[in-house]
Length: 275
Ligand code: PXL
Image (cartoon, rainbow, N blue to C red; front, side, top):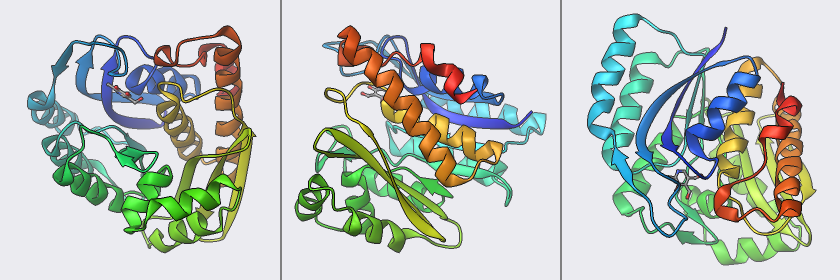
């Protein structure tokens, strides 16, 4: 069975991070091995939360994995709480990444042109360093701009009109021998939301209907389903199409049910879509 190491937190409520990756990758027939960065009562969008930071334990955790001689076919990283966590992820990659494995990095840093409050300059630099080691990245438009040193506003205005030529060109400029796939996510225009997939061989826009605002955990569900597909050997375009359909169905249900955005989306009833 193929095995994927997923570095993320475990949040008791919010259907995000490891609570999203574990069911999705398991249903796909893959072994999801969590490297938890923190345990929270609920994701941080709610009014309050408890958090137990596990950074200090990450080194010993990895040392045990190394002792066992475990091999991974894929790696997935997302939200980062500190530069020290990035250093542990780099140790994970140093110890286990192979030419055959796929590292998918969701370079979480910003949204709507604003860097998240919890990301200072040092953490952004570390997140970008990590993204440079990836084979696949899934930035939103704000993160793409940070990765490329580009200004956000003009690009966002074009994207809102459904013109994705500039994000596609920026994504292409990031491709390297190692980084072969960039998926720019969450491009809203009119009543739709698109992803732009850029690979060495082409560009594709995949569009779904957009329901309501943004829901907790959708980025984590997206990166988990995409990673699972790519590790299973699905081509990038099919992988993105299936992932977008899965998210679209899950978000549609939550929208119709009036689910609070903090509670995440009703993906559990659509897991057969990624079986
Ligand atoms: O889904 C992203 C995410 C993951 N983990 C925690 C979060 C969030 C988003 O707010 O708070 C703890």
